[in-house]
Image (cartoon, rainbow, N blue to C red; front, top):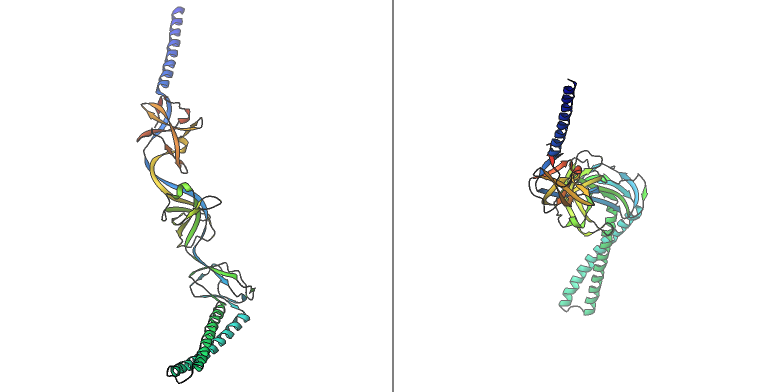
Amino acid sequence: MLKKILVITTSIILLSCSTEKGNKKTKESLGKNIKTVLINPEKITKLNISSGVTEALNEVKTISKTGGTIKKINFKNGDKVSIGQIILVLEDQEVQSAYLKAHATYLSNKANFEIKNKSYSKFEQLYDKQLISEDEYLTKKSAYLTSESDLKSSEAAYLAAKKDNEELVVKAKMTGVITDLNLKLYEKISPNSEVVTVVDDSKMLVKTGVSVHEISDLSVGNKAEIDLEGIEENYFGNVYEINPVANKDNKKYQIKVEIDNKNGKIKKGMYSKVSVETGSKNGYLVPKNTIVIKELYSYIFIVENGEAKRIKVDRGYSSEDKQEVLSSELYSDMQLVIEGQFLLEDRDKVNILN
């Protein structure tokens, strides 16, 4: 009886071991667990991501040539102003006196010229009829030419003095927003001082740069996305201008991106991140974390006939989370391994868990 019990127990143990080995063998035959996704060639829009600072598309700085004392200020920074409106008024006695003197001289010379002109015309007619001598005629002609020269000279001086006098009244040369107005009443400013800037903030620019590898595919009108510091919403614009000469310091080509600013939220001097489309092509994009690095080479794994196939790839265009891969072994509808790839070797049996 005891011998029978021992035989049965031994049989159970052997059966159990056999079952465990079978299960283990079955699991091994299924291969390594992975997840895959189908990949195909797709249009790749290349982006240049760089930084820049906003500025107005159009702005006018007013410089006071004469200087003077601030007598009146009608606006402050941030105010809207229309073309022709008076922003501020300066006073300068020397400028005003020079204008009055130049005006008086001009009027005097103008009257003298009119007299000399009439006299010369009469003597010219008499000379043509040979009623006066040549000396008398030439004397009148000389007086006429001298008065004409004096008139032109005084007119030039008068117009210059008039312009200086008129510029004591600073008017807006365009419709926009007042900026850089940092003056006080009765403050005296020196000649050639900047007094105010008027900015047309309906359209803004961001200056940034692209590399020599991107400039050939870039065109005026290319789309751009602008992420502005301090503003939650993103703005979209277009390439407005491309400088064909590289910057000497960073070897990049400066571009300007134009942005509509109808709501007025974009201010001059805002830091921004700019993503500019620099061309497009067809290619294979894979998630960056699917690329395996071995011995300084880049590889991806795909699945063929239940096995993992390792493909050596070169890297092309790179975006934030995607990488273009280049290889003659790539084809449409490949099963790219996206999980478990770091545990794989070439020709491993795999179990797809998708």
